[in-house]
Length: 503
Image 1: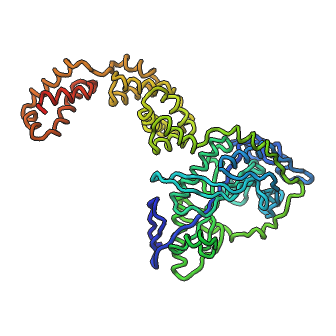
Image 2 (image 1 turned 180 degrees about the vertical axis):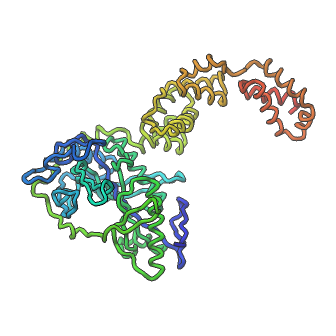
Image 3 (image 1 turned 135 degrees about the horizontal axis):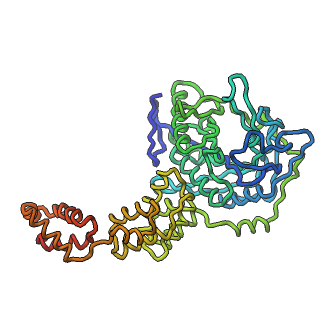
């Protein structure tokens, strides 16, 4: 495939052999509901159990077993809908989606097609360049997950593990508002962050607790605007669904490949077939899984074992009142209360634990300096150890104390990194480390002046050259810092050097 995709976040055009193209995408995010029990049974939910150890008779599809709706899962869906600024439907209905697959013992999945629990909403997403774009939410519905087929334990047999069968999922369906791979990744990240703030999904993509189906189509440049103006889907190309993508990197790679594939087909005179595809990260390509089913293929009908779900507005209002501060509100507040840049605020709110840690450390301190230490040095150390910020064990008081030592001139910013190394290695608080290792900044101007005199005396030619080339003073600053073990106050060093060198 020879087409080249412009991967700049702001570019929505793809250059093909016969002209420019655009990508149009809608995503279906499947988020496992944070719950101790399944959607329609009391069986436990959890990762790491042995095969078929968390299966009830309902999950296994035994005759005569009736589903009982888990109230907590409904509450989690409502909470998520409120977090997405979406309409909560007071009346919703569960439907049977009929299909045969070995990991679906009942022969149908209980889902919501006609009347979902959550309707339309909108999510504001931060792009990599600092701009924002909106993605419309079409719906959120509750459904039960299927089991899992295991094919690599035997060359002749497949095994079925039903531990996951019946686990509650929220399927969040977006409008076709996503235009680039970068936007798709940013959108999934934003949804994941919102869910984790709400506590409705743990967001663990590695375990498959959050995964995305990406619907990709391509159209000629300009046709998307015509679609938005008219609502006529004929302006868009035939879409293909890439199923169960569970990493940000794979989402981007799958979209790039699929867009190229579709453009090449159309430019060669062919037609894109609507189908479900899988992304193979090893080969870096998508491959056909099955032809795309339409709703009629599933023979949807209302589940006869479950009454329509009727919610009370007072209960929804109570849930709304209990919502935590969400990412958008927290970003705006951090900027207003601490004077942070939009970039710093966005980085901090990406993880709730990181934002909370920052606030604990920033009280009464230089907020920008605290943000730098939290988002750079501390985050880098955690990443190097393969840990999330929620696994951080360094007290926020240590960062606050480190920044205080910089602010009051006890240590320089350079020495602070050495202090942090010792603190990270468990040698005590920053103040204890400074005392133990003798790392206090030299502020005695007499000592600094002596070091300056010695270096100027040893390098008269360089000292004379500074008059013609003032920027050469940097060499002297480095030498003085080296002579004082990096402990000299940089401001004092510069002032004394300028006076001695006649600058």
